[in-house]
Amino acid sequence: MSCIFYGVSQESGCFKTSCQCGSYSSAGTISGTLRKIVGGDFSYLKVEDTKGKIEKLWWMEYFQGSKTLLTDPNSRLNKPITVKYTEREVFNSTLGDYVKIKIITGID
Figure 1 (cartoon, helix red, strand yellow):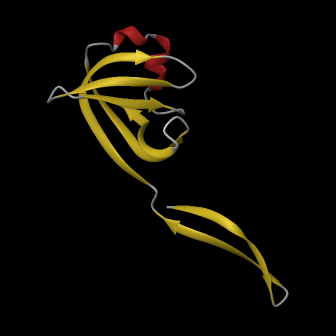
Figure 2 (tube, rainbow, N blue to C red; figure 1 turned 60 degrees about the vertical axis):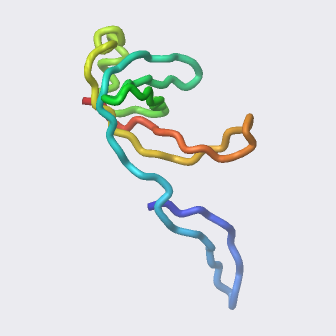
């Protein structure tokens, strides 16, 4: 559950905040084969699912299992992996619009 802050108003001598609450991310799991770890300002994993589709999963924060990828990333390449993620909407300045991305929350 997230809350987006809109502002503060003063009514009858009291300060009130205004926000819109709701669920802004969904959780999921992808199982497949880890094909690539791509570095950069923000790294991501390329995982091929059982149907042959390549999924891009962003490594934006600490997650359970990340130590294995930090210490010996090649040990997991081309091997089965299960990735837990949350899907979030982020602003893409190139497109000038919001896009959904999958952010890693854990690996098995």
